[in-house]
Length: 158
Image 1 (cartoon, helix red, strand yellow):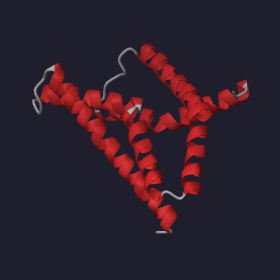
Image 2 (cartoon, helix red, strand yellow):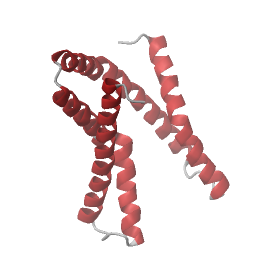
Image 3 (cartoon, rainbow, N blue to C red):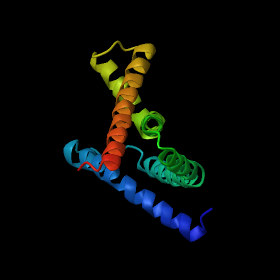
């Protein structure tokens, strides 16, 4: 477990990580749309909770999942089974991406917009299928990219 100063540092890192998203949203809200932020106080509380949640999420990953994932990757490498290593890499990338909270939220909003614009049928089942399709497409792409990255490392490809 991190010390209070370590948690504060992690909180600041999460703030830095989310800053580009905040800047893009603020730019479009203020400059492009020329509208004030609705319910600014509520928005700031929500942003604080997102940063706090991200900080705790990353801390949990570092304590729980990263150590076992690292030991499993080393065990696969020692065992010399390329197929199992690649399967592990793909499934890890796919699984973490499908479970990514930001992707879930963006896919859900994209489905709502697609439904309202008439690109898909605007009922719950169609929106859910559309959002799931987006998530699985992104997750498949991430899993394949990780497999390619592992192969590049193992084969020494540029």
